[in-house]
Length: 120
Image (cartoon, rainbow, N blue to C red; front, side):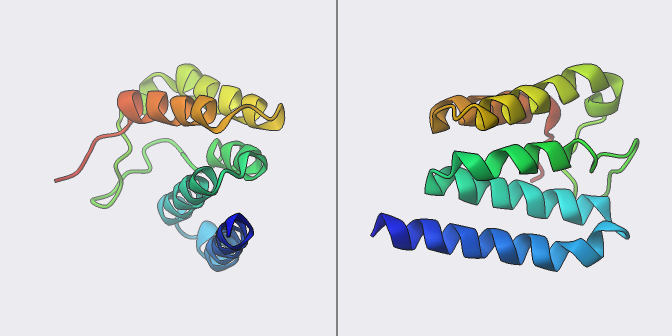
């Protein structure tokens, strides 16, 4: 059963990245949203190894001022850029080292608490 869940997560990650590669050049917001969804799926599936490349990729998907009506990115990201990237660096390093899913989730929560503006 766990194999099926992991297989489904990997398939989802493949679709997320495969479908977002074309969008990447045009819309960093759509690509980072796809990467965040893929990261959430990887965490739910217990696939810590999939988190490191996503964290590395996310650092490149926040060009200054890239906000829209669909974005939940806080302007604090660019005001506190080094701290924001520091969280992603820690997430990437922890995932690379094989940290437990709750540790990785803690980094996600920390970033969302500080740098996400919840819509609605």
